[in-house]
Length: 74
Image (tube, rainbow, N blue to C red; front, side, top):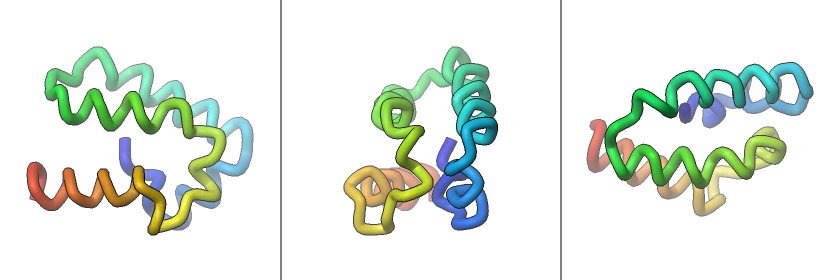
C-alpha cells in the first residue's frame, strides 16, 4: 500500500498502466484490512493515486504514513 514511497515505484506511477495496476492492487487488499488506521490511510491514498508520482517527502500524506509506520508498525 505504501510502496509508492519508493522512488523507483513512484516514478513508474506516472504511466497509466502502472497507476491502473496500483489501483487494482489496492482493490484486492482493501477488503482484507481490519485496522481502522490502515483503512483511513488507504482512503487518503486512493484519491491521490494520479498524483503519487509527484508527491514529495514533505507532503502531509507521506508524513502521516511515516508516523504510522514508526508508531504502529515499527
